[in-house]
Amino acid sequence: MSVSDGSPDVIRPVGSAAKFNTSRHSLGLYRCVVNTAQYTALPPTDKRTSISNVIENALATVMMQHGILRVGIADEDTQEPVFTYLRTIDLRQMIEWKKISASEPDAYMRDLLRSTEAQHDKLWEDLPGRPGWKLIVHQNSQPDDAENVTLDISFAFHHAYADGQSAVIFHRDLLRALNGGGLPPAELQDHVLHLTKRPRLPPGAEELVPFSISWPYLLKLIWAEIIWKELVPSWLKPTPSPDTVPWTGNPINPEPHKANLRLVRVSQTALASLLAACRAHGTTLTPLLQALVLASVASRLPPDAAPAFQFGTAISLRRFAKESDGLFDRANGLHCLLTAHAHRAGAPAVSALRAPAPQDAGSAIWGAAAEIGAGLRARVGSLPRDDVAGLTAWVSDWRRRWVGRFGQRRETAWECSNAGSMGARDAGHGDAPAEGRWRIERSVFSQGATPVGAAFALNVAGVEGRGLWMTVSWQETAVETELMEGLVGDLQRWIDSFGRTGRFGVFD
Image (cartoon, rainbow, N blue to C red; front, side, top):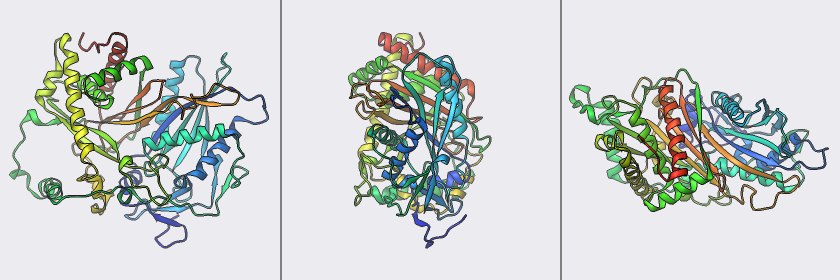
């Protein structure tokens, strides 16, 4: 189905910022974001109400709270994609139930990761007629002695609908609906939502965020991105010194589109130690994680192949967004409001991390974290002024831009996205356990293959008082699996060591 502007099915254009994601999805280059929350509850004594009905009714309630969950996307493969009005939504198509047969927690988590990888590799079908998101409800089919009902519910979504912080809000609202105990919305009849009113959507990010672009910034960007890259012949460009060229993984290749995920667990004990140490060193957790990734990758790649690194940190623009006539509020709205900050670690900084004496390794890591944190704070402090996210309207053809990158070097080696931790009360831990009352015990945030993005990603989420879970994600062939397995092992070992001893144990 294809609709054009002016059709009664069109709610509004997706907007220039969202085209960044619709264009990537239309080419199969970025397919899905997933946030998986573990829900537990003491089962109700009333066995007449099935778990599936409870989940469906709660989901319908959340859908009626958020208009973006009730729309499709049409004309995604054109330069003017639009959000579409859906008159009916069959919730049986929006909820998938999966049984995982595993007798041990580690085996269960491995199978949960494989399920998530499979979802990351899927394109969204029939977007004009069905929302680009779904729930996958995972349940262990192996009997155990626990009295609680335990479900891992994955909220999987097209990135034009939401971002990582939105996924946290979604799970918060789903938990509230599960614990609300009310009737499902009147629009839900026999598993189908019948929608007689058109959803009211907030404006696009380019309207919500008050970007301002200075002439010096614009001219500098035009010179660097257009004149220098595309118009100046290569024979006029000086050859860069080998020790200044950052390692960014293998060149861009859209195939194979295969996501790989690995987990790193940060216990609450280790997290408390890390946060206290971050405060003592004048930095925060995200820069520290970036420094740990840098230390691991630098130690595993030879200096001649990787003398320097360039990596990114996702930044939420939610704090800058304007409250919009009842259509959006920063604390409760679902939206995709993101930009990123690129950080370059030059040869001297990388050399300091590569082979320090064991007693000096901690100082090198904290020094790198402080430098990364200072750059990140400066960038956030300047927003929303002079940011590339404010120039999306200047890109006339995103699809052509992506295809033009095939075979080229990546801009960054990795990106860290920290969706944050759900508050203890929002996760249901402010109340005493009660029959039929649900809680969220963990949150796992993941991205899939990003062929035209960073070679790999570190994705972070958690629940207050329950620690963090981190996923390392990468596209098959974008970076070597051995390197990623080594990174995951380093992160887990160093974080565990810090939780026990207050030292990372790097290079011990």
